[in-house]
Length: 469
Image (cartoon, rainbow, N blue to C red; front, side, top):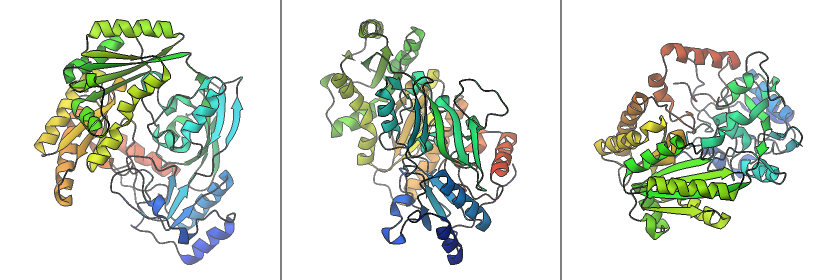
């Protein structure tokens, strides 16, 4: 694979170049240094911190264009940022330079009810967009766990997903067109409002999931669908991991298409219970499957839920048709992340395998963790085959933790690939997962990725060091 040059670590912007940038932008675009850059030095990746030299917070696409044109002239690294909720270090300004925050590009430009599309700027918060379109009886399905804080631009950069991607797909499925700025400052528009478009190469789909390494997305045209008339949540507790994983397969074999299908193994349940007591029925469970069904009527959903409960004969079925009870069941799932954080420093591996290999993935995670003397917790989007494997540090010293963590992660990734899986399901490659790509792709495929990067960003200034090994 051909090499791709990177900036020198901790690039320092010359004072005169910084003055030039400030003169080209509206007042207040560059963050006052006295306010500090700490918030722009981190994302949700554990224990990583890289300070930019300057933070730019543009309010218009023209400002983004000016910043990137300036950066190209002076060869300054630029790291695009949204709400910094990512879990792979993709928004970290590893090489210093400019942190380009899109948080102030936060307008819903157009909501078209006839065509069921919405045009939004990159800084629009995902949950706020969902609430706005629901007022019109419409639905934007992608729902990352951070949907109340994450932003559309970041979702597009990562091709973000969530529980409801099981039925509705990831962010990619809803992006019809983009407004984006290339590293030289050129503004391009791809796609548009059409539901069908095979004109030329799909630059839209190439940019979705490119993690801010090819262009900076400033706005997007998104497809909407009708909001489901009814929803029901079903919880199934089982006496073994294998029975829970088998139940996931049987749900789909039964002809039922769940909107969401989550699997929690016993250790995940134990950590949640330690911070927030579980219902009595779940305390002896070795796995827990959480299903959400949606459709035209509550009666049809209830019939499907009862048929599934009779088929699986779980320890106990928990059926929630009203919103309050549904939220209580979903809180069990939503509390796992904070419970893990409270318990220990951790490394999360965003592994994805075919659904039929879910139990094998959890067993492989346990073997890898045990061999390295670590504890692990597994949970996630079983309907997609996408589980989050959390390796826990416990009381280990940093050097020992780093060594054991890397050994366990390498062993697990080998097994994931052997099972026909992929290195990342929804968190992206970013800064932390780059080393695994050499195992996941052939040299020819990696070389093609490098050549794509060079075509878009010949100077290597845009989100340098991310994705490519």
